[in-house]
Length: 129
Image 1 (cartoon, rainbow, N blue to C red):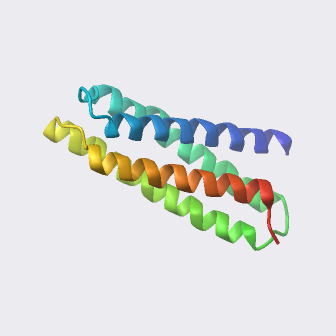
Image 2 (cartoon, rainbow, N blue to C red):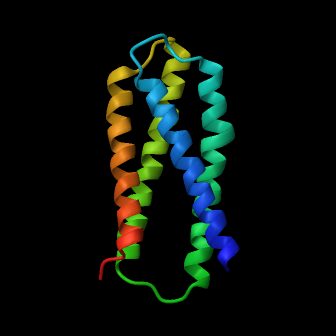
């Protein structure tokens, strides 16, 4: 079972890193980000990592037995992170269609992503009663 937790952790690191880089690129005020790079990052890195993280997390949940109440809160926070992931995809489409960086929306999404990643990390490490 340790390999499953390692897979889950690695997928979360890749997903979180790709999502943070993506929203940072969308929020930058400088030159608009390269559109093909954004799409490739979203479709080839962030989304597969999210699917692996969610799938391996579900497997850990099913195989590890009874869980505390904090896990329900964690799952709600993960659902919010998934919503942020979907919004990042919409911003990538917006940049592709309009050719302009979505600075304000990217900054809001960056704050959203950082908040949920920090909350999930705290919850997993603290495992409050």
